[in-house]
Length: 78
Image (cartoon, rainbow, N blue to C red; front, side, top):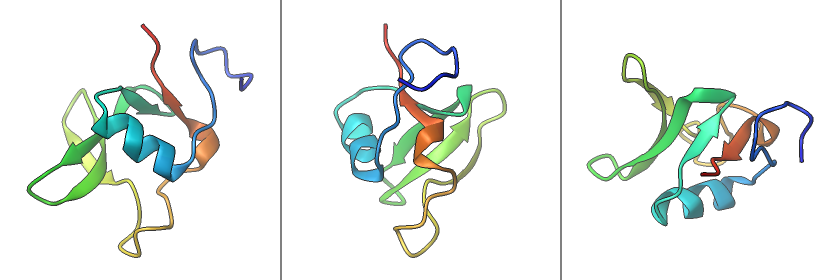
């Protein structure tokens, strides 16, 4: 577990993030205000800021380079 103080925080890989989102789990970036979503119309994963719905791609257009470090993503726990 990372030492961030956020419950349920654990470093996850890009493939784990995608799998978790597709299986219905909530994945956050940096804090609970940012959520990773799948946008079926775009066939892409996005990082959405829940308070104003602004989004950026989870990855650059190369599909590999993430917009953030793996250590900053975590799967929410109930």
